Image 1 (cartoon, rainbow, N blue to C red):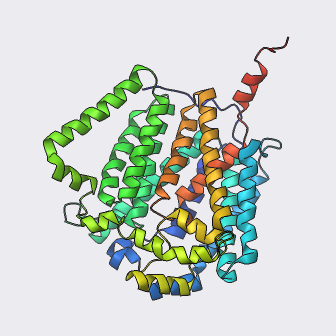
Image 2: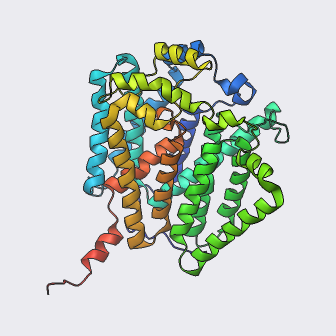
Image 3: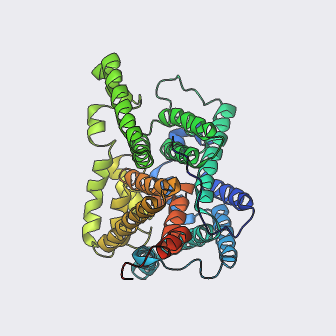
Length: 436
């Protein structure tokens, strides 16, 4: 396994990043987690009426947490070294344009009060993410995502043990911990990916993050989240293909092909199909409709057609009326389209979706470019992490919710769009003048 030290030339401005990261981890936990969710019916989803009520009233605890996050971010930005944090190329301008479009959507928002609340949360998240990107090294960001995700997994496991709901051998069991199983699946998927990256960048104790990644893979399967599982495996494979070179890359492809062939021969087609479904035993009709998602998307199309260009305003489409109408049509309670790209069309229209895809696509390209120039595996992780987010967005509306994954993607994009790699700059300056 290739070992690469963190070669970031610009030192962090904070000598003790873990104090800040402990605060961020706790704040996001208070805003997004529920220790009793595993004993609640349908993992706390509730009825359409209860979802609509929560949407209309909001949550006072979350408001305090978001204000603290924003205040921390604002104060922290003043500690960023002058000149080290500014717009860097096309990606930086694309990020600014996307943010301005989100904020400006309040002007045409269908539900002004809901849009205002969600935009405040968005702004607080952005301030904190900008502070993380400006104050800490890229490896600090990687380790924050790994430790925060692992903390949520451990706390969730302990919560299920205490409640007596950790029953992995029971039919139909899905591990949730302190969030919905799909969200916990994304959390475990991030641990898997970050564990590989942390092992590559470590000079010693490389086996520890690899062991953590292995445990996360087990819990990822237990969540029964097919979207998170497939996205995490694909993103991890993408990362490993980037960092491995020469014969090691060939050996990786050969080993994966061999394992899949052996599984097919031993388990047979029927057992392999059940394994791919992660033991959830869904009917062929359910699988064909992506567990009812295609029906939701179809119901959302008329609403998109009414405002195709601008949308209904940032996170303001799913108000009480829309939740009630679409939930009753689908015969189950929902509060989003279960596809981030469909929800982006509903929120910000074609323009907003195009800007979203532009920012995340350019972020992956910028990370790949810096990885090719520096061979620092953290840049490969950044590219794989953003790819992981984009893949999950096909099946889940993750950017309508609060999570460390959303926060982390904002921080990674801010780092790539506004933070210069001093080592790459010095390397370019040291190249001989071709015209001399």
